[in-house]
Length: 339
Ligand SMILES: NC(=O)C1=CN([C@@H]2O[C@H](COP(=O)(O)OP(=O)(O)OC[C@H]3O[C@@H](n4cnc5c(N)ncnc54)[C@H](OP(=O)(O)O)[C@@H]3O)[C@@H](O)[C@H]2O)C=CC1
Ligand SMILES: CCCCCCCCCCCCCCCC(=O)[C@@H](N)CO
Image (cartoon, rainbow, N blue to C red):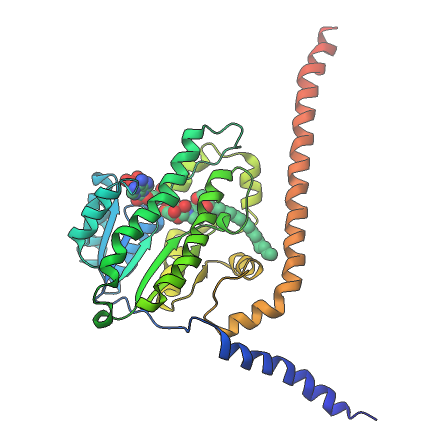
């Protein structure tokens, strides 16, 4: 007769040996990235999440530079940060789509330790309605603009990295960069693009002690979101509401904590944690505990993901039915009245 104790021991041994195995193989190794007294460069730092990031980095003792297009908004941001922290940030007016302008700004700002590529534009609309110019605008600012920033800053980041400690390149994606959402064909494409960029780049710069992070916020209360909400398809709002909204300060805190602990993927809320585990794919994972969770939860989270899709397609179907009803009542409703 088999010893029942043996059963319980092996039940415990299985996860423990998996944990042990993962602690040996997870790469790259986790590392702490200090912020204090280091040069933190934030693009899109004059508004919303970027401004909150600049604020927090400055109050943690970093030398902060912010870059965006409008000099007025930059001045305003600089004043706001000075008033609340007593610290002056450096400001640079440039469009990330203009490589020369970006390079000039980076040269003036000096070698960067932590680059936060946060600028982004978003116009939610069905692709059929959306002008190609607007599609191009999102791809150019969100994706090409990020390439421009990284290409401009990387040489300086690599040089003398040895004396300056670990560097970081963080990219602001979105939960719409982990799953495609109605109304976000161009936006999601630009944010999914950042993931490919980040995964490949991490392999290229690990030898230079530079660590890449991707931040995935849900809807976040910012001037950008207020503008977006003015003309957002109803279905976009319904589906995006699957994840709770956050404040810019909360997202900035999560992002900065994630950057400091060199996490490759940085979720911002509880739905974001589930989404990140469900979409872990072949991305690097530095924490063997998180790797353990990913391995164990993969199956059940796939089921949860399918439930979300079931719910979303239900909303889409319902929306189409209501639309049809609206057409019927306007067309036939009138005819009946007239007849
Ligand atoms: N708010 C949200 O719901 C979410 C936002 N995100 C992402 O977070 C990031 C920040 O968003 P949020 O804070 O809401 O945005 P805001 O619109 O509030 O701020 C955007 C910032 O980017 C700058 N910017 C825009 N275009 C350019 C450009 N071409 N060159 C240089 N700077 C530029 C803006 O300044 P200026 O216009 O003067 O250039 C501003 O500083 C974006 O990447 C966005 O996609 C992700 C998930 C949710
Ligand atoms: C398996 C478990 C799944 C967990 C839940 C999934 C929830 C997904 C919601 C996606 C929301 C996308 C918001 C985009 C915000 C954004 O970027 C715009 N505001 C533009 O700025």
